[in-house]
Image (cartoon, chains in turn yellow, orange):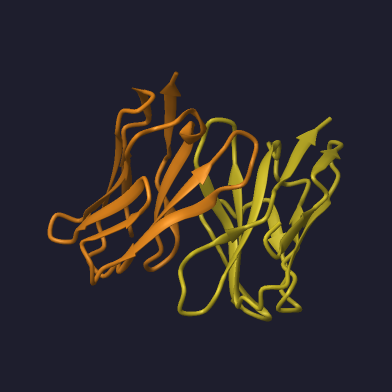
Length: 112
Length: 109
């Protein structure tokens, strides 16, 4: 996946359950991002982190949480507070001073 | 905040014809303008980008043009092929990455 790996590829969540989506990169990129994409829609920013131990809310952060304990890892937790989590989740990274994104292959989350 | 408008939302062209997608932005401090291609069910991939110190950049059949005065940049695809069918997104990273709403391009054989 071009140096950025998302897992799992498919994830099913039961009502009231928290789930965590993994994102790992070996590109030595400082910045990492999480986007949500609904069918036929664009990309909406959930959270982003430009440095370890620091992250900022994006446009739709409610019901989500993140951590950035290591440069390589930026996991996203979808909490039970997110009432409509069914979507395609994309993680991306970029190098400092360079603006092109590298995307992971995505995780498709479905509520069952 | 930054506002990015992308047009058209859908575009159908005959194979071999050209396609043009346009994005308009609001922040005059923006200095980097990428285009991404997303095939069905897959991740977006960077296909071409341009910095504000040039007006045009070309890579084989695709090109991007930038008009900083008017605050718009465009993706041009020439001699379109069926494999060009996808959703294309522009983005403006200043001060924070904002994607356009996407253009679904269909190349008709």
